[in-house]
Length: 386
Image (cartoon, rainbow, N blue to C red):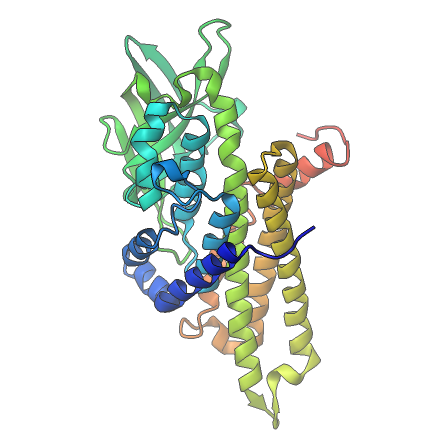
């Protein structure tokens, strides 16, 4: 068992960290509060090849895997710039197309993912079904040479930044008539597709939307894999990378918070001693640091299993990694705020601005309760509880 990064992976980690520090958390917060996007950071990361590290080399990518993309996600977050769009575009959409797209789809989309010029968001969650794809109300029907999509989605990240949205719908199998998941690449400017922004209490330059599909017509080649049979495996191939990169983003944010807190309590003196010399301050930070490092190990394991093609094991590890990361991130940020005292609630000190994002990580993209259900059923052998 090897816990060391390869020289290439270490170089990637160091390089992405340096890029993140050039921009920093103040850049991220300023963009969010101005209602702007982190276009400059995205463009620079794209130019340096960081966004395409997981795309196969034949399409212009780095030829790496989710391990490398998780490094990118973590290190940008550790610099105070947690970019959610890395999760939905390079991690989910690019992976789905690379693994299950037709040759024509790979040729059409993967070079854009590789150089970062293409952004594609992901739409599965619905108001009445959550992420339960068995209950999705968005449907697709065949109409001549086209497909027509109808339904609505909620909490769709980055629609306003993306050229395409990867829509999960249900479609009848032509042989059995049974409804099953199907994925479609839909242009965000398609007639009949509309959006409504959701106001969120989260400091983020990436926005959330309701998405409405009112008889949106797409050509046959919009169906991922070219067949409804490709839908279920394509869907699951994107969910594990989603969990892993979300976990990496959360743990990077936790690292940033702990670094800020540790620096603050080491340099602030009260009653003639540094605040951090008191166990009432040092121990909570140390406890959070332990939880963060444990979560990082599970993230690395999950990414390794996924890249090795061990999908069943990766599913368990990815869910555990996401659970551990979200819990550790909330703990780390809350502790960082606490040890700052009143300064912890100011924008200037850069920790309270993290709370909304890490708290959302306990809910999305899959809630901690559903992960516990999964572990109870699939790891501990208990009866399904929902």
